[in-house]
Amino acid sequence: MTSRILTLQLNADQAAALDELQVATGERTPAKAILAAIRTDARTRRQSAERLALVERQAEELCRVNERLEGTLAELRRAQDQIVKREKLAALGQLTAGVAHEIRNPMNFIKNFAEGCVDLLAEMEQEPTPTPVGAAAPSGDGQRRDMAGVSADIGENIERILFHAGRADRIVRDMLALGRGGGERCLTPINDLVDAHARLARHGARAAQADFAIETVTDYGEDVGELEVVPQDLGRVFLHLVDNACDALDDKRRSGAGDVWRPTLTLTTRRLKHAVEVRVRDNGNGLPADIVDKVFDPFFTTKPADQGTGLGLALSADIVGSHGGSIRVETEAGEYAEMVVELPILPRPP
Image (cartoon, rainbow, N blue to C red; front, side, top):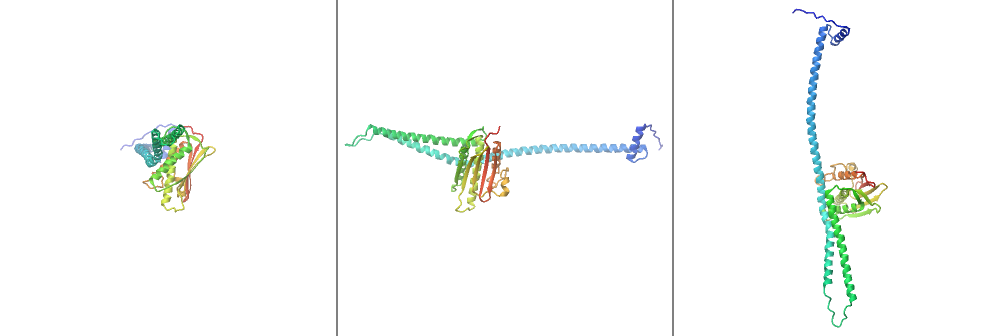
């Protein structure tokens, strides 16, 4: 092979660059240094292209993983909605027997007083009893007094019928509102709201365990008054708290608490400086110290898997929080558990 000589005419800057290239490549001759630099550049470009292709493949894989995660998240949200609905339906189903028992009382009053009115009207329509021979005929004043007495009895019965009919109607309206949930904020008497839903929960527990009697102690503050709340949602909170208390009392009874122990549910309301406080206390087994911080976590429950979803207290805390309030638990293992709800007196802006 014939050797060829390559002559380069370089200026000072180019000569300096060529010297640096020779030092970097370790080649003494300029041509070899240039070839080594070209090979290095080609190798670098090839590696960059491979890395770019790898990044593109990883980006595509991340997009596919992201799509799968979004689909999984959507499924979890649907599952959560279904669980919440099942929790609500389970609570409503448990209340059915209690509502039936609660409505039965005013309806019995209505029936009895209505029958009394029918009997009194029948007496009024009867002809006067013939006066026996030789007896003095009743005076007109005496007959008027009898008629006035019967009329007064009828009026009193009608007032009682109206009262108990209104009571039954109120129970039905509360139950329908509880089933719908949501609603608008309005001024609501807190004592009445607590008492009505506590009564529903107690009757539900009594219907489930007919042989279980609970003593209820109420201590409602007279100055509690009204708060601007969503009564359907907040009523569901009190309903669940009382229902949990009844379950705790029943558990202690079944575990053999002894004859001295009396299952007691205590409901207390107080007006504080800036809030209204509602306390629901039971003298059941209480809660162990290691689970007190977990009771408001979603899906955490101390009940068997077929008896609870662990969402009741979590939803209650969410409802109370939406009203600008707070909920906490005070307990002593083996002695009592007390749920404390605080609601601000000034409503939080929607």
